[in-house]
Length: 293
View 1 (cartoon, rainbow, N blue to C red):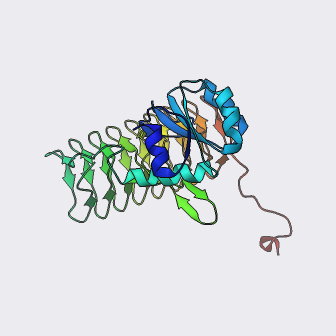
View 2 (cartoon, helix red, strand yellow):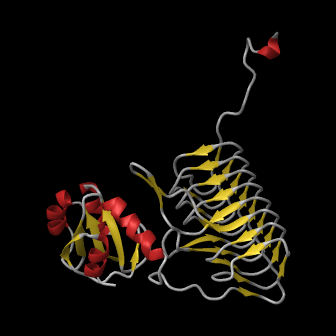
View 3 (spheres, rainbow, N blue to C red):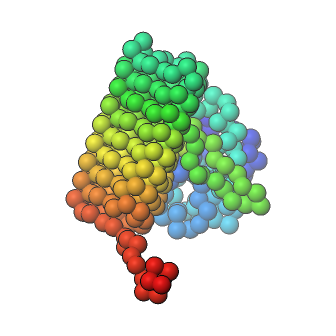
């Protein structure tokens, strides 16, 4: 689709035309994408990013953008670029702009409990996968082989991607979720698909604990252990052989290096190098507490 067509649909001011094949964030690894830019600092990031075909920005930044970004990148302007970007993305998500899901494919050797829900389109369940009762497998999900999904787990849901204005506008997720061979998704865990046409991926031989949440765009390597109730925010990279203890919280876009270990209940706010073990203070007895009376 041409940027000029998007401008007509969104009521945007076209400055330079270009072909647009997807929407995405600056860091989204999708070629031909349109991104929004709400401040001058992000104009600098455009120059070093690859795959961007057009930007949507504010009228106040449009003149600076014309000079700052390469002439081959399309440009449009609107007052609230972020909100306009999300609203048009959500509108296009209900069309075939991002493609049409294929009919769901379930391998004859897979086992799906009668009380489970599997979307009729966009799901691939590979050989020897087992889907437990009340599990939910949504469009965009691929289970490679021998994946065990325990009762109540939700695969292919949406993460917390919301635009806060006078009201909340949720960003429709159109990406994928890919779960590798022999991985076990335990009861009531939730794994989100990616926001744009990339994939949240879980490697081979992983264990995702009860009530854990893996958000959109996360990349979890092979043989990782994600403890019960852990929360991994969007865009995190958890490399092979890593262990996240029960109740771990990983802030978005972090990297947990290969073989690293995060102790139970820790909140991780910065990258963890490969092989390192990190923790936060554990509960301890304080003098003068009820226990001392």
